Structure formats: structure tokens, C-alpha cells
Image 1 (spheres, rainbow, N blue to C red):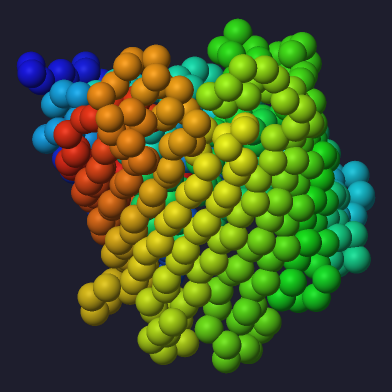
Image 2 (image 1 turned 180 degrees about the vertical axis):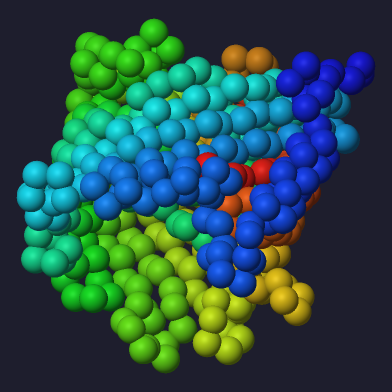
Length: 432
């Protein structure tokens, strides 16, 4: 088939990296005394001291960029290339410094996404090759109030924010680019009213540390699919609420205590219930309530010295009932090596595999509708993504990630046989 190249893709990853490297080098050269200047944390620096003065006054300004350019070089629906990006900016107000309200913080975040998704528009697969793809418009992503009690042992958050920032995530997964790894199992949001960044809903979140290494999370969150519409990007009170989502998560973090010799890890068990009415999957009729369970774990198994260099493994599992789910089972596993070569302590190399299983009821219904020879058994059981990624920390504010992904059965969720796909590309991240 003819190759498709979106105009946005003309801003090549190589050209962008070259420009960033030159800019970073000039910034380093401009420092009057390199031995006296601390490493720059952000691209734009301290704004002549203004940024520090604002923070001392209780106002922290933050902004970042993610750019992802990929080419589908084999298989899938067709060959082609695509570029997508995300710009995010926000302000955190320390209410203790501003009005003397101890432990309180106000958060405001605006998010903007642009570009083309190589999975949705070219390869045709379900597990997004680009983590920042989708929802290409500007929106309000957070307006929330956070309060700590008992020296942070109890944390409450109220307002309009992304539920998935607090629950069901795995930070280690963001050593990959595919959204199936970074940063939540898509079966959570694909099977219920669970929602992840940058989508926000009204909610109340509770986090309580039962002890330093054991944390309990819960809350109550609005379910409103209409808040994903571009027309409601800055209308947080838009109608369309269908129910509430109630999650419960228990996390165990070995090695978190200061001075502990135990290797660090994270173990999460969770369950959630969505009270909304929804159509039954592959059958006639409606049902009340959707739910699911998940187990996530990562563990460092080898540490080099006293720093962050080491080898970690991770695994994910989720299960959802066939009556309500598109993805009935989810499996993921992988290895992340932090600290690669001599002097590259912050670099990482990662390899992972994830499999999402299509609900057999949906496969059966589609096979009957299409009158497919061999029935639903002739359709792919699910989609699998394999990813190899290398993260390079060029500056504290700049990282790049060359990336290779191989997608098996990319047409599984479209109920068709499609040739396995190979995608090559990379990701750039910057802190402004």
C-alpha cells in the first residue's frame, strides 16, 4: 500500500534532538562558573531567580513536553509514519506559605495534545504504540484541593482530576512508550468508567499509610463519558453522569524505609466497582454495575552499589467479567535495567510483553454476524505487544528514548486477521 506521511511527521525526531542538544550545549557554555552552578533541573532554568522566589512564596510553576515519532515499517493495515505530542502546564499553590493552612495544596493543570496516532490511524491496533496519542485538543486536566494530615500519613484530595494518577498505576512502566505499559493496564479504563490522565472527573480520593511500607487507597469518582468530548474540555460541570466508581487498593512497598537494606519494590492489589448501567457484551440487554480486579508488582532483584543502578522485573494481571468487559484478561511482564554503561547511571534499557484478551462473547457475536468460516475460533484471541526501549538521560530536564515495538494480531479488537506489525521510533521528554 502507499505510504502515508502526516505533515506533523516532517518535524523529525532526529532534527528535534539535534536542536535540543545544541541548545543544551549553549546553555552549559553560558554558565559563568560550571563548578559553582548546580545542574539545571529545567530547560528554562530559574528565570533570573523569579522561579525560586515564586516557590518560596508558595507558587510552583511546572510545564513539560512529550513528543513521539514512529514509523510502521511492516504489517498492520498499512505502512506510514506519525508524530504526536503533549504539552502540559500547571501551577501548585502551597496554602501553608500563602495563607498559613498547613498541609494544603491547590493544583491547576492544563493539557494539550496534537498529532496523529500511529496505532489508530495506520497500524489499526488497540494497544497504543504512542503513550501520548489520543484526545487531540486542549483541556482542563486538574483543578483540585489536596490536604495532608498527621505528617502526611493521611492524604485527601477533592476536586476535578484524573483518578488514574492515584490508583492502578506502575511508575516503572514509564520506561516504555506504549500506553499499555505506561502507566495503567488499559483493561481498567476500557471496561468501565475508570479514567486516566489527561481525562479528569469530579472525585474524592483518600490515601492512608497503615505503616510506612503499606498504603491503602480508596475514593469515590464521577462516571461521565461526555466529559471526554472536546466541546466539554473546559466544562467540568457538563451533564451526562451515569454513576460512580468505587476503587479500593492496597500497596506494599518493601525497602521504602530510610536505611533499609531490602531491595525496593511495589505490590498492588485492587478492586473497583462502577455503578453505571451498561450494555451487555455480545448479548442483548443491559446490566447494572461493572467491576474488575488487578494485581501489579515490580521488584528490584539486583542493585549495584548504593544508588539507583540495578535490575528490576515487573508483572501485571487483571480480570473482568465477560458480561461487561471488552478485555476479559490482561497479562504483562518485563525487565528494566537502570544504569547501563559506565557513567550512564540514569539511562535504562527495558523489554516487556503485554497481552490483552478479547472477550470470547464479542468474538462469537462478531463471527456469527460475519458468518466467518470456523466461527469465533478463527478470530484472534487477543492482541500482544512486545517492546524494546532504551532511555537516554541527556540532561536532568531532557531524555530521549529510541524504541522498537512488534505487535502480534493487531486486528484482534477489530475482529479481523491482520499481519503482525513492526514500528520503529522514539520519544522525547522535556521539563520546562
